[in-house]
Image (cartoon, rainbow, N blue to C red; front, side):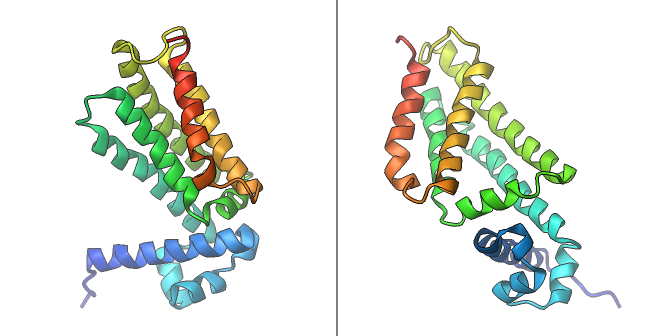
Length: 199
């Protein structure tokens, strides 16, 4: 008789492995994060690991996909927001919250080491596309409401804001003294001043 799988328990175990992997990859880099080390951190055997993730690349892709799914969740939370500037600030807040995870710097560097993997490149592009689409939507609404500059199209404004957010994340990954907590007010001020233009 086939074993019944509890979907909630299955997903909880999957997320447990992802969380452990994020910690190990952040500390050791992609190459140094062996499946044995991830299994130890997750408190599981290798059979369980490979049941969920056939390869380490598949695990990395699952971590990246989780980040992309969070963009969709944020979009749902913002769906009923009426003030476009409140939505834009919430998007910045989410970026800062993500950057504040102490594991994020090491993870960013680890992902950079496997940029030769086409699936990783595609996953990163899907994530960027999701972020940019959400931001562009709210920037267009803010332009329609007269709340942000209109000398540049919303898509171009989104591109520049993404550059600021990505640069913020990169600095956190590469400069020990550059922390999300300390630099968040400067990031917020920079984004809002840029969007205001000559308003």
